[in-house]
Length: 319
Figure 1 (cartoon, rainbow, N blue to C red):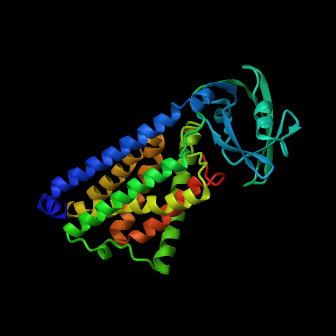
Figure 2 (figure 1 turned 180 degrees about the vertical axis):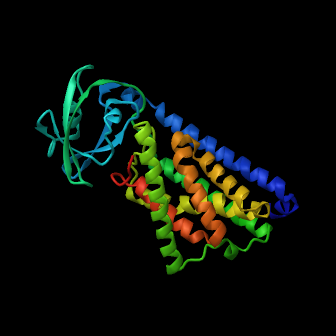
Figure 3 (figure 1 turned 90 degrees about the horizontal axis):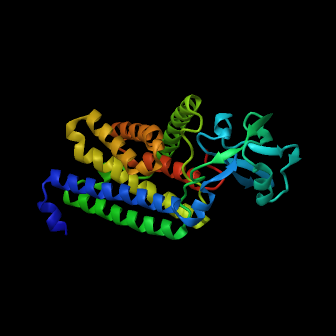
């Protein structure tokens, strides 16, 4: 296999890597569509309500997701708000099934919510009209089994990257995967700056079209799977989308290399729909420019681990 790779011209190798990435994007899309089309999901696809997904935080009902183009989205509701009362009835201490029964009703009827914003320490009351909600409520890496499968595939991808680096005589040290406290701190700073940029895009997009950009994952993974995926996936993606692209295309200059890297990162996340364009592509640009300047993958890995951990931990991610 190594001898075969040595004989391949660099453009042919790059094309084959793109094909592998193309397959990975198609796989992600097919798996997501398979989940959306599952019987359990179809059962919840159409219902009468206001368009929110609730989750329990302690004894409180918290909005985990706001479905686009629903009464809740049009009213400007966001994830993280605490539903304190429904039609003057307190939600605290009640079961999840009670919360659903309190919020749902007949189409055209009204429901009043008392909402607490824990960030701004404010309480607000909104009246919403129930209507038929169409479309899946959540998309998720729901299965530990699927996560294990994805992790093994990504480990195989990492092995392929190491093989290509060996054939092309790209020492891994030159890719910048060395660990240090200084680079770890740089990764934390990179995550903070990128998160602020993404939050701005998120807020601006939803101010124009409420609910158009939303959190993709509604994770129910076990803690072990969260840790496993949050450690493996960033290594695979950053070696592939940043390290390999810069090493392979750097002779064409910064702009083309960074744009190609960001575009391919967005393409690999195409199953996330509009999020891939509005959120993943800007992340790719920031990460690409940082890697071009620093030539250090460790800060990108640290920032990516934080993003994945927040996205995969139930109750931590935002819509």
